[in-house]
Length: 396
Image (cartoon, rainbow, N blue to C red; front, top):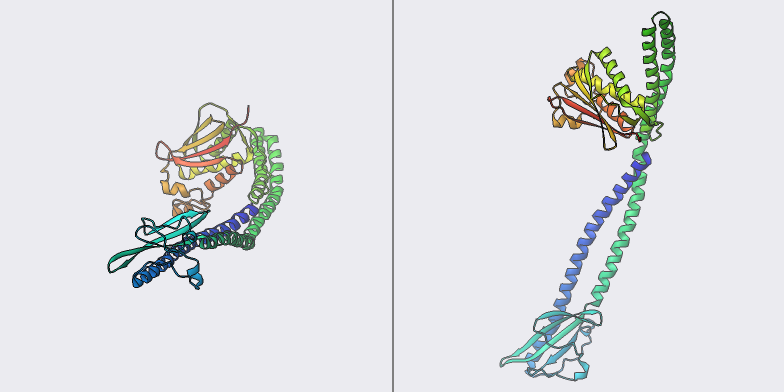
């Protein structure tokens, strides 16, 4: 359990950092890509405009001069007359470098994207030439490709380092919780051990009583055996919560267990509980833990449900359900959502006056959960509280 918790915390730590890095990296990548694209276009436009201005000043068509500027040398320029003739050596002008109808366009030449700008040179008498300037976008695309790989590997490396840091921090955070669970298990073990001696004395007294009153003695022995089993199961439950479960499920005839729990509630708490219908489903459960969970639910009926309830046994879709519907004031939807929290009390003042600690339904839910089942709360037909315990049905 703690290893899984530590792993989830470390993964969450790394995941959050990875999402942040991805968000910043992707945003930065697209901003840089847009700026580079705009910068390339402006550079080509400036080169084409400068050549058009030169032709306009000279008033005649001539081939573009060579440039010693490295950035300018990377831009190819061609000059066309109004009739479409190339100024200078036609062999020096590639076939794709010709005027376009659009001012700025992008083509693909030999798997390279090339940006082309078409500019008209005008003199006082009108247009005298058309300037075509082109520049390959491969350098900036190579830069963006390198940046993508840097972002990917950098992000993965940062996530790995974050996971390692999160693993260490999670280990430090989980340690107090692990110690608390260990203390809980030791307490349960000590309590179980300390209860064995008084239970043994009670059993001896019950055996003596049974010699004079067999019915009473048998009832006492049965209750003592139940308490002995319950202490052992509570120890098993404490171990289960710490990830070392000793709970073993077996086929259980639910009606027999329910009947005993109802009789105990009627005898000890003066509850009035009817069992419907007359069925006996078989569930996979721990009989002692299930009986303890039923005791907690029926005790809640006596304490807060008006002491009057109906209990239904249902079996369908591979599951066995035990539904207890009381006739008390019930709980609102908001309170039902919190009713399974430890120490929750809908009416703290009233619960304290009656001795309630707010552990009944929370304990029942924990006991059912350890058996692979679930405990759900809903509103009953009469406006009270409906507690449903659902377990896996035993295979026939």
